[in-house]
Length: 252
Image 1: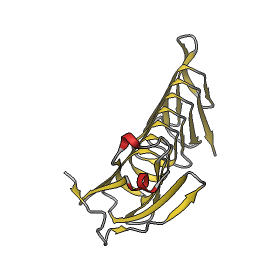
Image 2 (image 1 turned 30 degrees about the vertical axis):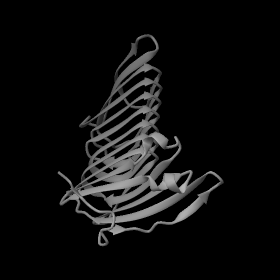
Image 3 (image 1 turned 60 degrees about the horizontal axis):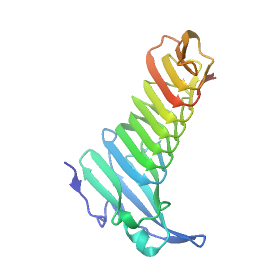
Image 4 (image 1 turned 180 degrees about the horizontal axis):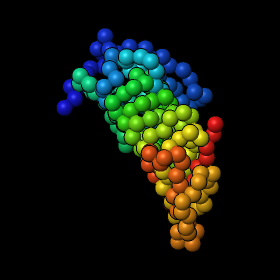
């Protein structure tokens, strides 16, 4: 189990709150957190409303900037950032103390930097976009209502949205990946030197691909299924959308 850490731990927590006005209706408060963490660690974040950006860097710590946005000071104070940590894992969770009185656009937006090489990363948000870049880790990015956009993320990779587009761009290397959405488009961009086997399917929508195809067929009249291989096909990539198109392209 995770050991719960107080928000006042001075050596791991940089509490730097400041408030700015967001027009007439909203105010914000930003907190910056720093936690020493090694590359063999796990990072998990669960958010309810708000976007998440996570980027890998050549560092040996986790840096978190959490910006709370709400319509009043009392509403802002009701949003808490829960932090749990053990030796090789850290879990961040957004908590609303009085969710029944929360307005729908109150949110927390996260900007996170982690070691580029990491054991595992899991990001979940109910309402908001997720952006990830320059990571080498077992990675899971999920949003119920929002777009998922990943650039140069290696390791077993899962990108999933219920209502939103899903995009993966790999500029040099590739790895196994699963991309899925219920309502939205999927875009996969690969280097020309990649070795992948792609299995793509839509229920309603076309598949556009410039990869060498081994199979293409109709699905339920208005959908399509495609299999394609690039290089030796070493890395399997699965693409699934119910309502939307799939684009598969190479660059370089």
